[in-house]
Length: 48
Image (tube, rainbow, N blue to C red):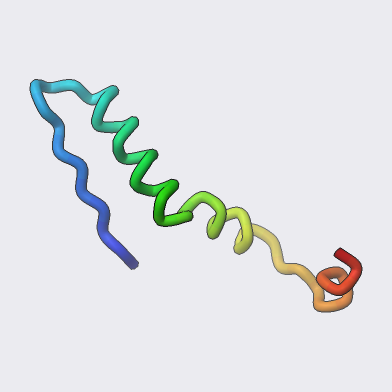
């Protein structure tokens, strides 16, 4: 699993959280989690 680091400057956690979310989105972590949330049958894949 990849590690992501975000520095907190001047105690500003809101900015650090925003930067963390941006980095995770660039690495497509949320979309990968959505893909793996449910198992999809091969027949259902073909229908889509």
